[in-house]
Length: 115
Image 1: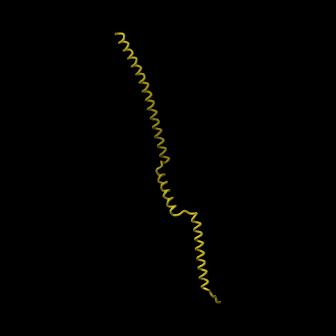
Image 2: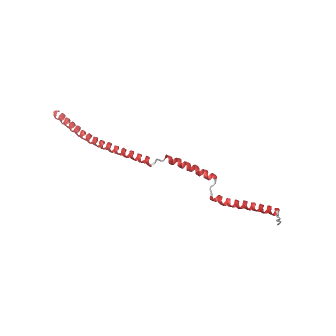
Image 3: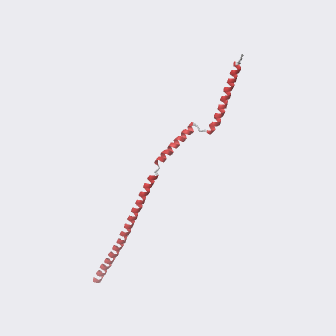
C-alpha cells in the first residue's frame, strides 16, 4: 500500500484553511464587537458605579431615618410645651395689664378729685 501525498497541495490547502479561518474570525469579531462593550466603556461604567456606590454609602439608613423621626417628634412635643407655656404667660400678662390699668385709673381719679 503506497500512499503518495502531494505536500504542495497539502500546504496550499492548509494555507487556504488558515486564511479562511482568519477571515471567519475577523467577521465574527466584527459582528460581536457591536454587541459587546469596549474596555474603555467598561472602565467608564466602573467609575460611574463606584461613584454611585460612594453616594449610596452616604445616604442615611432606615435606622438613621427612624432616629431622626423620633428626634423630630420630640422637638415637636417640646415646641408644643413651650407654646402652651407662652400662652399661659400671655394670659398672665393680660391680667397684669388690666390690674395696672385699674390702678392707674384709680390714681388718676384720686388726683383729679383732690385738685
